[in-house]
Length: 191
Image: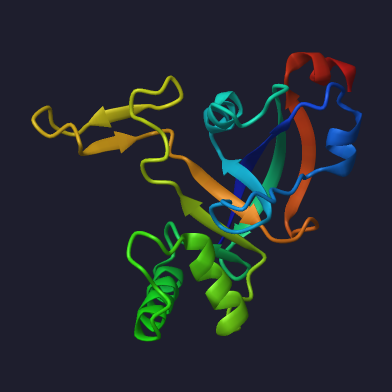
């Protein structure tokens, strides 16, 4: 089933808007990228894009947020949030890595498991991965909206601004369109 989503990419502010839209989306090449190197977007909630942009040490010169449209299709998006078949594939990869001594609890990352699916098993045929970063934001962050289910168990809560990310592995991802600057206002006005 295909579903329309609004996505937000947070990028460093180069001091002028021209190259951002023309050259976008922009690739994350950090060694600690959660799902491997790719083009990262926050799904649905612009607050998450602001949370990342305002985060300590992410961007020295401030940040810009671009909006894009995407049609999520589980045939081409590895959906680790609400596709049980994709979750089973991920867990089966972990089991296989354990069997061959390639998995260390608490050390092996999501990015490493995706690379294993891509390069060792060669069964990963997706252009993107969709996942939620559980506990990536603190509940008391100004960019969080967490409400406990019961007062006696505040560790159980409803998160209505969940940090859902999509990482595209190619710049020209199918169904990704309308990449445009929406923040800061000074760049929106100049377009």
